[in-house]
Image 1 (spheres, rainbow, N blue to C red):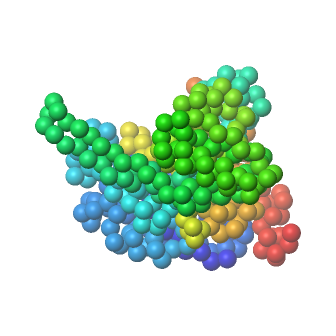
Image 2: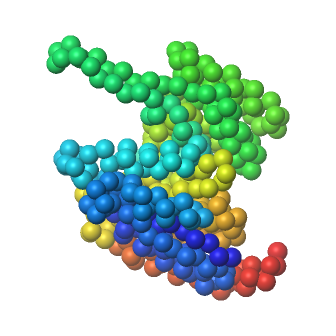
Image 3: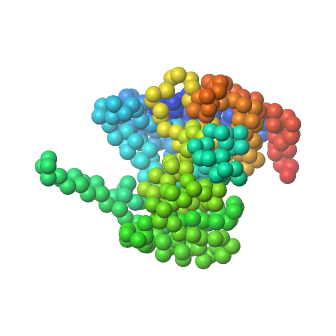
Length: 375
């Protein structure tokens, strides 16, 4: 299968971890007989330096002419946010690309690998039975895309942020959550603030209506303030967690620490046509950029999600997950998950995952069977 991938590495650790993800994709090519044409484009601060804007038309064109987007990260140091290169960088790049392609569904799996239980911030008795949840976040509306205004003189200023939701948008994300749940443990937890917000009252009503078309699924509604506590107390009880944009932003970051590190987490953003952008949850981490110590697993798993959700390559996706798990079982750790032990570099972690991917293929013969179309 031939596919064209827009590679937008971005800033900070983006290029370093992207390099390891591309090595994994090259190994997938070798094993399964695919061909991935990768076309690199600039976004974020690196694009601002060359083109004078964070999401230039050259990058728009590359993304539009691809089958999927593999994204790194954008943003610069906190103390340089007012410099032209970094001012409004995230808004002008990642939010702009989401808006341009009408990405409305964000999928962020949070899995605690058995080998990393000691790295989890929660007590051992809480994580004893594992954590495996999927955060489904609506991306296209909410307060991020409303009006934002500040007026008045210093001492008398007034700020205004508009939150809004359309029924059809809520309906679409709800269907995405229930479809995902049907392939998992058939439970959806919908998060809102229906005791206060009109948007949340509409959200709850629409989600309840959509749930009736999935009678095999359990639906529960939880207020966002209560959810922020319950997900800490009993994370293993949650399967698919459905959230509006802002609540999803906050809660998905909260639960990300369950995996041991933000560096472990991938994500996918999809539109109604199935076109997708795949990025790790770690951010640009400018403080460690260029040191070769960043965790590439989130970026590698994002590439695996791309294979599954955009290209329908389920076996290849599972092979990468297996290679990652084997690497962790083997004891390799980057600094963020080392838990006081010895850590390896970004490239060493990537190389070991590629090695285990190749070993998996040799042991199972899966690449040969897939190439021949065998079950």
